[in-house]
Length: 103
Image 1 (cartoon, rainbow, N blue to C red):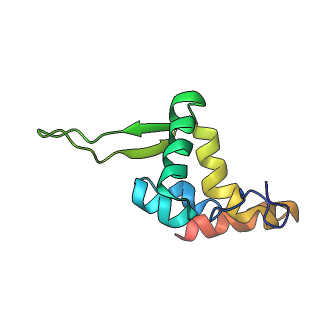
Image 2 (image 1 turned 180 degrees about the vertical axis):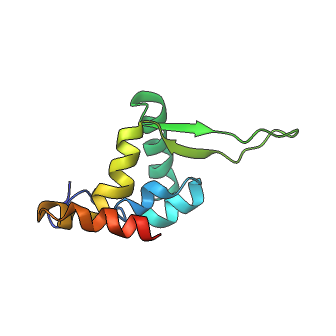
């Protein structure tokens, strides 16, 4: 993990990249090449099972795959804790809760 940005992986846009579900948007957010992204998504879906690859239900066969973080606790961490890690480390977790209630 990047020491300057708690909760962020090097070369990614923190948890914002975790919110993206489509391959093209993940690529744009992370800045990975298509080959690197394909390998990364394959490892995260097949080997590590961190991501779920879902195809929409339709009459036609679709190549539009959406990726979802499979673990609910990790989704919670990426959605709420990681972006507000600075506040959490200061003991101000209630600030994050208040911001989310206002949305």
